[in-house]
Image (cartoon, rainbow, N blue to C red):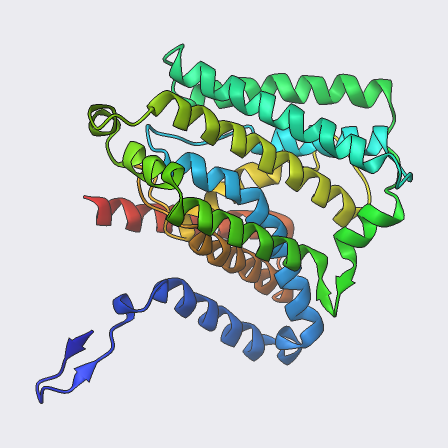
Length: 320
């Protein structure tokens, strides 16, 4: 809040929580409406919200890793999503009864992969960028082996309904994202783990000096990232109703983009899941607008990459 020359209070954009993201969302909606009024039709709005919700859930673990600092970026998110989708497809397929067992399997596997990332970073002294990239190659190899041994199948009615169905008129993906948002907000704001995570991300040496169990915090962070990526892979499988070796690949970079656009600093110690959700919505609205303009995939990727570079440039200048 600032004041004008006459002494009257004036609300500045910086005083509004996530004001910058909300302004960008408003501008994208206005631009889309000007290009095509149907851009703001209820059908399109729900479609964008469903897609952005899926991206937000995929970005939840990435947000935790980025907040943890120490150059934390999880490049294995997309690979874990792909492997999870293939395993659920192969184990459960069209059977609703086998879905819980398949879901439990991929969640445990996601946690294990996340722990490998954390161990490589914490105990072997590898940069997160390096260890998660190496792990992603291993996971992609496992996905290839699994796909060759068990062909992907169409999803059952339960997982497909979660992917494209609705609850009281609201897409299930939006409902699930809202539940994840509540859990993530409670975790980051009101738990000891959340406070410790921000402290570790801000200054790991200060955290150690304050008695924070840094190793445990980081291992839990990467394990949570793996589990959330696995869950996202299952949701993606239900949404597209198929599984292949490249299904999760785009989500590695998109999850980073959503978190960074939403305000998470790559230097660590800063970021919220609400911001990540808004970042995911911005990314989805931008993609939808580019599609509305008739641009092909190549130009859409190029423009989306340019937007990310501009955001990274702006945030890095702010950090300095």
